Image (cartoon, rainbow, N blue to C red):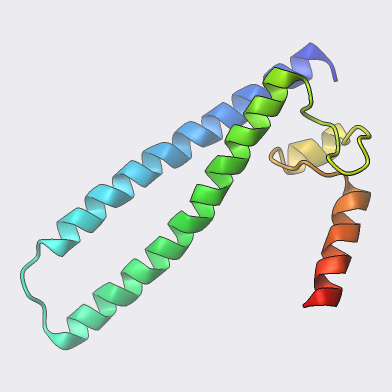
Length: 120
């Protein structure tokens, strides 16, 4: 992969990482604010709990994405970014632009998904 391509992906990943980390900090503050609203009635409490549950699910997904981004940034540093972890062939730039955190080429990812589908 060309150096300018690596720099493009590094910037893309670092920008997304900064956005997600900022968003996570904002969520913590929002959750702290809603917890100090006094004692709500049972229906309000159920609504608040449901809302928090949704927020936690979203943040959990974002947490996994943060780990993937950090892993891909480390791969850029060690020279393995853009190389499929299964077949060790280059991942197309088109695929990386669509999914910069991927670590598998289309063929290997498709095989993995088919295998998971067969198991589950």
